[in-house]
Image (cartoon, rainbow, N blue to C red; front, side, top):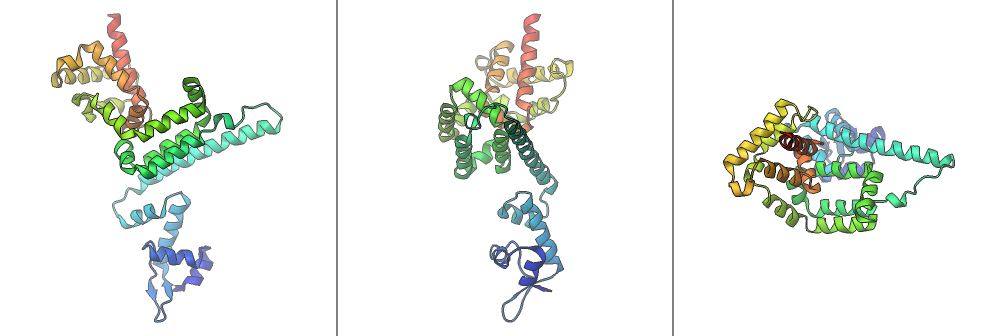
Length: 290
């Protein structure tokens, strides 16, 4: 058994931190002396080692507690997500180091401020904290939304360039995005209402998205598109679906929407939405050439 002071000396964790872990139920002492002093055995130290490991990876204490309390928690999946976040952060840091190296050599580089999306990123963080239910509903989990934010940070310069191109300035882009976030639930419900019920049959679109990387013009992929179109004709009013061309154009337009794209990529994996669009576009163009 080790006292709280001995554990603090061994691990570098302050006694107050260990007391806090006890208070929130994250790490309980193995025993209490008659005087009320905390004692920790080897099993408790192993648990503390796990806590420190998860904390180093960036997990919050609440998340760590859930992980340790759920024997069926998918730790491998959690590790993979955290690894992706760390890699994104590393890539961003590497690019900043490269930029600083160029500046050190006296090269003329675009200033950081012109590509500063911090105001928009702060808005995303506020949205995450204040609209957790919407985040989980449309992104699948808070962790997925964190990855979405991190990707924006990682590609900040490119996102800023597109923002300036489309809106004239980062400020105008941020203002428009803040408006979308303020009315996010309303906007998503409106977009969802435009999607016919047959399009909400996730299994068919998931099946198509699972083939991303394959040639969209191949017979196997085009047959999957035909299956979706046939299902649409058989399960929705003809005036809503129209002919094959109208339906393809509707799919392409809907899945080109930024928010729907984000939601789709969250469900099916990055690049899935673009792949679905390209598969339908290939079918449409192929049909027009006949």
